[in-house]
Image 1 (cartoon, rainbow, N blue to C red):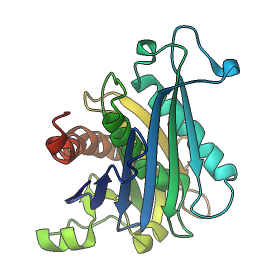
Image 2 (tube, rainbow, N blue to C red):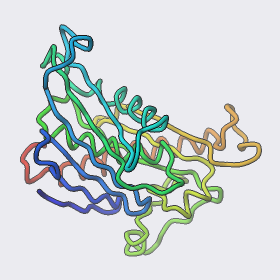
Image 3 (cartoon, helix red, strand yellow):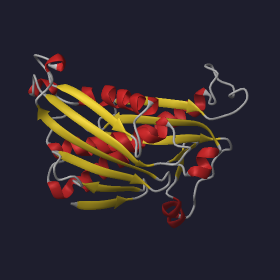
Image 4 (tube, one colour):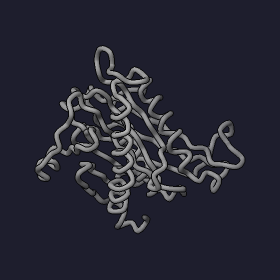
Length: 253
């Protein structure tokens, strides 16, 4: 079991916390106080009704920290399944099941679906790699917000690490509770290491008219380009680096 802390994304990543699973990972983001745990098992026997003659079946289950899952967990599972299944080389294991189970161990009341998606997706990717599931590529997800007021770049590198935030292209990465409460909009994007966009999930956090934009949301086209550029940079540069450093001891990447 290995623990890796990487700045400035402030992700505390623990590999293989569940020895009985084929692959598992725990991922914590201190800024949003969100901690998730994922486990992957497979290829294993699949139910007859879910069997596919030429491909493996990919199943994603999301559980809350306490109680029974509801609409939020069902929505999260659906998004994760649609994002992760195309990354898996399912033709290598036909008539089998690859099961991904995720549990939200900790989150604050303000936590939304875009905020949860980034840790869940990144954690699941690590679990798939540790389980030896064949993937066509790796991916990384990042959560960004557009603040109500233009953010000011942090001059002090030490302060940036302490706050675990990053200001670039008019966005704030991994916002804490205070920054999220002041945001106009919240976005989670995922890219493959080659730069292919895999996921966009956004919500309007603003009140009133929602700002001036073609679709009536709380961001305009210039702000959206800033989100896209920063998300791609983070996923294809920082995400690849973190994945390599985290798995370096495993000699897998």
